[in-house]
Length: 313
Ligand code: R5P
Image 1 (tube, rainbow, N blue to C red):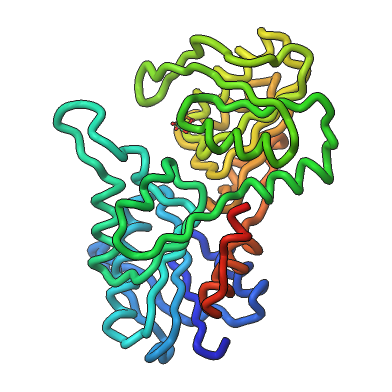
Image 2: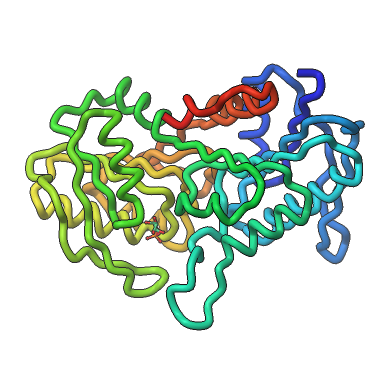
């Protein structure tokens, strides 16, 4: 592993440190700061010539700053003769605009894929993309991991829920919910959600049997919490016994924490550390699980040219 180097931007430093602990290596030293006018200034403080370098950086809010840090770091590494650069992006932002669903809108997921490649990424390692097809926006290898195993282990060891039904809060998360339901041998239900504005949603219909069941809502991300709130209320109205949520990326913007606070029927929201949870956003009903081991194991296998497919199961 002497050719392996892990670097971190300012988005997910704790996760990067935990990955290094798992791999039993030191986090490489790099300065990632700002010039006085706000431009990003990067200096890699150690030799990376010929190294297999992994930069851990989620493109979570502040998304533009975090994305730009990642691009500038890769430029520095490319010019420092790193042998291979892998952008490890636990949360891949700008992914929700992944198609032209209205006239005159961008496809930012593709734009970001182009930017990452031009800046020097040779590979991407990411987790629970908003849409799996985003892998195809890249012409370099993309390893796409799922947090489902981490959630499954947590619920299996802590809750031992009977009469379990996994619920997808919208059509976009059906695949994820189905994978979860299959793994834990639970039922599946789907919510027909309509987005009224970028910040608000409404539940139109629940497909599947939820009456008297213990529910886990599975989704890729929570932003304002509107989707989750609506889903919890609708499920309780439909007779669900209890409702929990397992959501990979806790963006938690705007009134998200107030919304969770108001959502008394939600027993627990479990998220991962793909996005750091600020102190101000901590909540008695929010539990954070680490994905350091999952990412660390993938990094080890990619570095050793071993298969990572068992990590997708
Ligand atoms: C939608 O397609 C996503 O999977 C999430 O359900 C949604 O983006 C969550 O956003 P919010 O928390 O603002 O409702």
